[in-house]
Length: 248
Image (cartoon, rainbow, N blue to C red):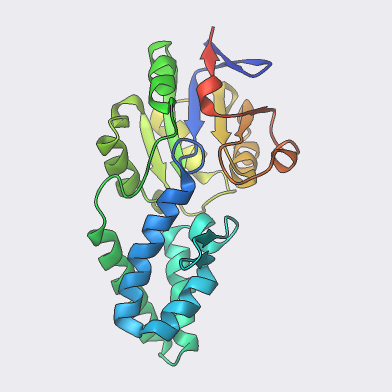
């Protein structure tokens, strides 16, 4: 196995699993574009009053550009967010059946209106770092709360899709983060084992997912919204960004 250098840690591994938003791409820009598209279609179907309630209930303030990084928009799988959106519609007078149908229609239309890379912007130096890790013999994977199709299409547009041996989205597993399901699926697809795998992410849910999957090590990065003191409680190492990673 190769030896991954993360800060002062040198960890032998064969597979590195990355979170996407906040780790490889700018989470703020991605969530902002997604929220704008969904809000536009929600307003079209249910009006301004309900659209405002939707913003509040999913953790977004588009007028001021605010995002709750612990809220549903930032952390919940799409299927869960659909139910949350439907709840907002239900509270504004729609039957539960109508609310669910409208939520699905609005979200589908929003997703269809967006084009790859869906507002995703790689952090500077990420592509070069991933290329270097790959050339040094490491297998690379993604475990993202985003759905598989959007992640894959975005990565193709960003010209990094070929660097990953597998991509696992929350739509491919029963339980999202911090359950170990996405990591276990990535292990199955790459024929890897937990003791040769490293999880790298920007959130405590990424770290907990890695712990629950019993991977060799969990590495926290500071390019997301989670402060160092929270990551330190769960991570084996903390690095400023994935661009400092090296292989020896």
